[in-house]
Image 1 (cartoon, rainbow, N blue to C red):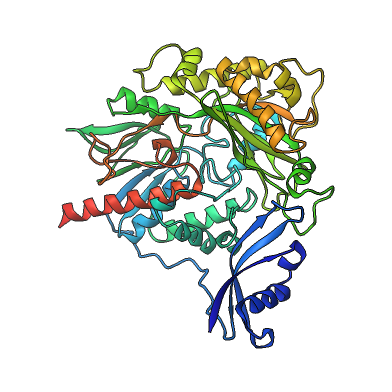
Image 2 (cartoon, rainbow, N blue to C red):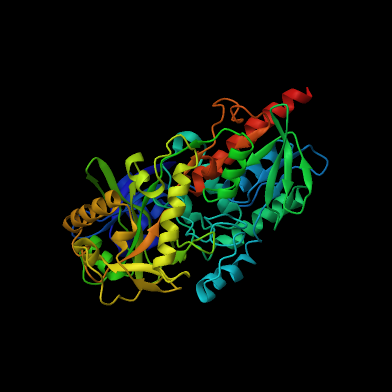
Length: 524
């Protein structure tokens, strides 16, 4: 008989399977000598006390436990099935494609960028030569922005779909089974390319298509319906359904939709900076120790403070990580963060951002509240200012944290993981006054909440501006089609319906199921 128990162990105990099994058996009231199997179901770290503990939920049994399948399920052959166009090969597009195949449809994935391996050369060019390819960068290319931006899988969107199903799919294509049990699952930028490649291979073997270097430049529209797309080389592709899964940075797609009369809406987003500390500072603050126990992972944090009616909060925190240059045009500077699977870099970074109210947005792009691209234009404006301040290349403006709080230029800068390099500049002067002031007060509060956080060894790097899409593409809540254009299915982060890998993947699955129902009804 199997029992599920909750136990708390020291880091050393939690990393020893024999001790885990013994503790679980004792908690279940079983004779440890009779227990033959156990499985960790959930794992988290409780660092609230002076001695951090792992909290484990364990299934323990006196009988053998069935092995859970980890192989990718066989997909049906859809070589002769009706096509569905999917624009974008990020998590929303890939998971939509897999679900389309299971629904008996043939996905045709169109990706403006390169395959996941070839993208690496373009990322290296940004870091080494400061050159940005508008179609192949940290945001565009196979796998989308998430592939080279950490692979964090934590989501609060449990009501939007099958979170565990998404995680199991990732495991089936090569992710560590640890993501099924960790409270804050993470794959790592170094592991994701292999997983994405395996997913693409499965899609193509089933009969789907994946076309790289294929940028969509127009829609085929007739009688209020989208019948297909036109690509940069002039090719026209038609299908009964077109899924837009283009991500939060596809500004050309937003402009195209607006020009073609497809309804879009301005959506709120957040703006701020990326802050980097030595990882040891965060470890000491969170684990209450001078040196982190080797059985503990690099510490992370989650901080929020209300300032003048708006929340100042941490976003996409990357322990043992690197600040990445995520511009999608040559004349802008954008920062994000990522970590390898081991999270073993010497720095910890996080976005610290503030929601952009209309009053602040006016400072960036003028009073154009009726323009659905108003927020996008403001986002673009601050990124361009950062580019100019950074030397008109991918150098990023930066300030020591205490200097940012005090409003003074930094005479020198600490070592930083941002590979194109940082340039001393008044970062607070690049941001709207309402954002900069709230960040100052937020940093002061964070310094009180976390010992060592407010330090001039920390560096503030501009700008963190791609927290979410500045545009929403409205769709019918039942059919998930665009509210006025039949056959068009806005999807994922770029459409304003997701915020991260898992939620985007779930949205892709939902859209695929919705369009399959419509196509099946039409053919009945």
